[in-house]
Image 1 (cartoon, rainbow, N blue to C red):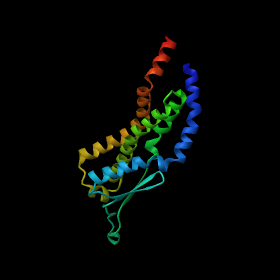
Image 2: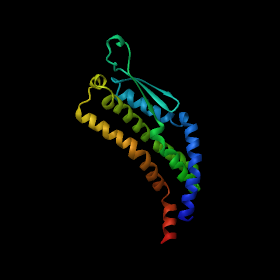
Image 3: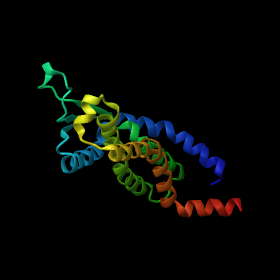
Image 4: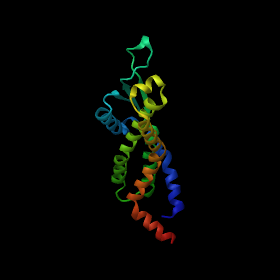
Length: 189
């Protein structure tokens, strides 16, 4: 296959892949939600009371109070749209489907499983950024995070929002399609 033809095929698959991803997001992102729940329960139990999935959104119920005297029974909740961290899934699917190798269903499933933890990373980092950095001082002071922890959260958020959703599917595709890339390289050499 020539490079130009491959690019056209990827571009042709992208709309369909994004449509399927968007429509099936609640089911497709359920494993990532399970990872987020497990990590929240194990590592953030003093901060996160519960995590519920509503479509493609995770709703984090926290132990934090809004800080207003008459609403002391109220708790802070944070909504995180997991689609923001999962857009690499349809990108990876379009790349795999454009090649249509002999074992493409297996490679697609492998990619999905490999991308799921990165979706969970972005989702958790977004939640932590919201409660530790962007919320008001009455809420951020309750988290107990110190300066270096806030810096680490900001770094994790930037990595999870800007780098991992785009770079991870591309790297994964290169790893799973090395024979295709070698054939393409020989043709252009």
